[in-house]
Image (cartoon, each protein chain N blue to C red):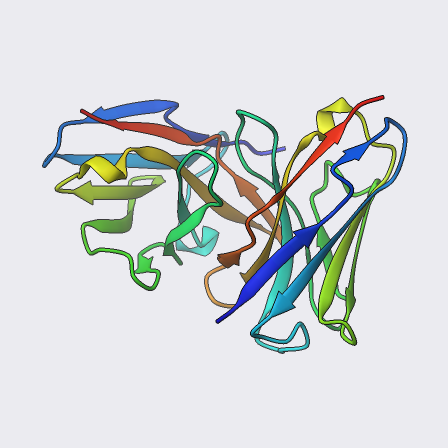
Amino acid sequence: QLLLQESGPGLIKPSETLSLTCTVSGDSVSNSNFYWAWIRQPPGKGLEWIATVYYSESTYYNPSLKTRITMSVDTSKNQFSLKLSSVTAADTAVYYCARHDYGSGNHFAHWGQGTLVTVSS
Amino acid sequence: QTVVTQEPSFSVSPGGTVTLTCGLSSGSVSTSSYPNWYQQTPGQAPRSLIYNTNTRSSGVPDRFSGSILGNKAALTITGAQADDDSDYYCVLYMGSGVSVFGGGTKLTVL
């Protein structure tokens, strides 16, 4: 059974860099059939795709965020990560990691439970 | 940037049929947009319903179906049930690895 678990700071100050990690169990981040993604949802609002990464480190970023984000894969730990720099209150959201079946209908097939990140001084 | 449009809200009676749509602020949705649909209840992660326009995800009842209607993607719920009362999101592929979610539709079953 595939499980994805997000981990992050919970609370972060404005202008700092947010670091999030998704730990994958039940599959390998090196599985050549799949990509891995981050998606966020501000409180009471809709979903926003942030970025997608392939194990070979190919990355795709949301154009509106690309100057602030870096996504990477750690195959030794079976994890993938997101860094978001210069955060503001607008970055307060539940952050989800997901398996992205990019080559199969662009399908976000499996999601973690999400982690709430609050940006506040 | 292209905006993906959804009805903000919709209501349906139990047992009724409802069609939610997903469009583009500029242009038409086609199968090459690989429309996906997700269902979300409060406090929960989204659940995949439909991908690649009309393929049901594992375990999704066949009362949920996806299609292209005119220039939009559509999610049809036939025989709505009380637990279909949820938020529904579509996502479209824009090319070059970029995906964009719609703003979501709040469906009320009453």
